Image 1 (cartoon, rainbow, N blue to C red):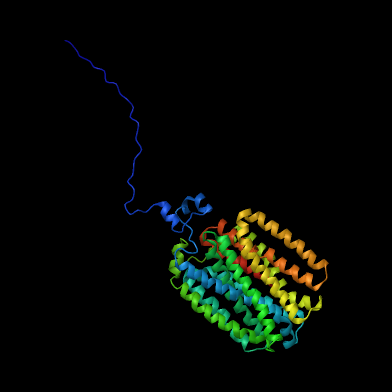
Image 2: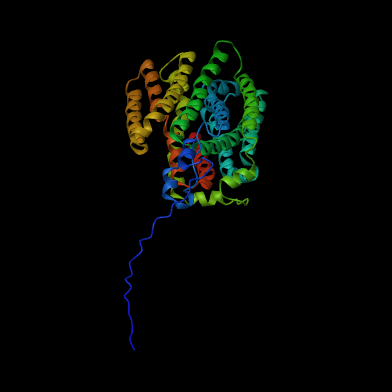
Length: 408
């Protein structure tokens, strides 16, 4: 029996890469990013957040309007913080107070700041940014209306805690929102530049109202009341769609979890930012608040000229935040802060060692220029290192502790 055999040679098959068809709607990742989104460095390293993109100041378009309203709100914020510097001598004379008792006007807002840090995340989860846009100005408006009525001094101290609560909500909410944007350092610089602009014009307006036009110190808050009404209207309108449900969705938290503050306090970043702002705001607010008294009693300046030194200091803060906000990303956040601290210390020594009015006035303005970018830098550090859902709680707590520095 004959058997026929044949040999079959097998060859390996090299798999070919699959070719997927391009989407038909002309949408690409590049096009999407060019529309106004860019992945942050943290998101690029974190696969869970890799699909989340940064918004821009002009995308979506409503952000332009929202930023404009926040710039206005921070001008009012700065006017509030800088007002009691030039007004303090007149408050003392009106109520016959010593320095210790008069300084309670700086301590009372700290109580409100602290309360705001504890409940800010709760309010965000329940009412969203719309709730913050409503509650913060209303609390400040209540304080201004009472002060405008020239109440007894204890009532002034108590009601300033309401203003501090409103400022604490504003500080944490809007810094956290802006800090997540593309080019956040520059935008935060502009935002806090607006704060500095308000703090610049506030002493000038208050001093002129009293020394040039013979008005009483509490009548300055007539102006603040009108500005707060405008802020309440425009900011609320801009953030009307930002409800609690929208906030919980964006922060990847579908429940009204109220434990974000506790989680934020477990992060080392929160405490570093808090201690940094404690020292920074202590220097900034105390300098802006007491420079008028110092220049009047130690440098023997005239009331109007001494009041203008506070304007010079806050003008330096404003210009520093705007200009150095664009310089800081070029040289790096850490190195920039170190350079600014060294410059500020050197100029402060000049302020103390040369006891002349003009030298002191120029030096204090330059100190303001170099310390101006510190607050935006701290906010940017928090938003870079912590997840989005902890931003409000962390920044709110840090700002509250910073308010303690201002009070001290």
